[in-house]
Length: 196
Image 1 (cartoon, rainbow, N blue to C red):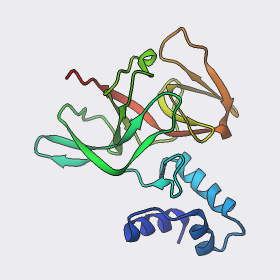
Image 2: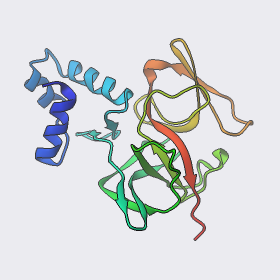
Image 3: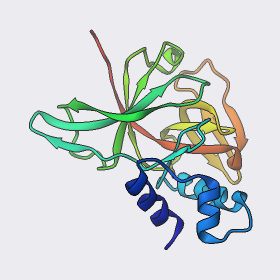
Image 4: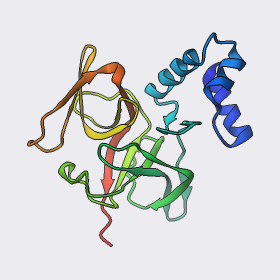
């Protein structure tokens, strides 16, 4: 049984994720660090989501549900520029009627928590529609976690071992960092504005 299968089964059985030590003990790894490396790889590939600053800090990407009114998309948490993602303890679902048929199946929602992303043309209570994928193409807009906790919404460009995160507006300097310092939580494919 591989690590991803174990994590999925553990979450199904317990309704929470396994700790690094539980993964280490199950597979006989020499250290919890070896388990952490496996989880990092799975997160980078989009098979798992990372919940920063939590003791049991991994989750499975939620799935959309078909609904008579359209599609019920999982609203997994809040996002604010430069702060850790605020992942809800219990996933909520929000009905969305205007779904593009070309959108991928594995998508979820993040709610903009404040106006810290207004320079990225996002306002408080806007919803980001995010594809569960961790391998962006150049120029795609990503939800990126830098150094395990700082969250950014920016356009992604990669040059070898280095990544450039560029603001959606022109007056911000790009952020350049090593690939190992970055975790892609998903690709932003659209946003929904809340006018209420």
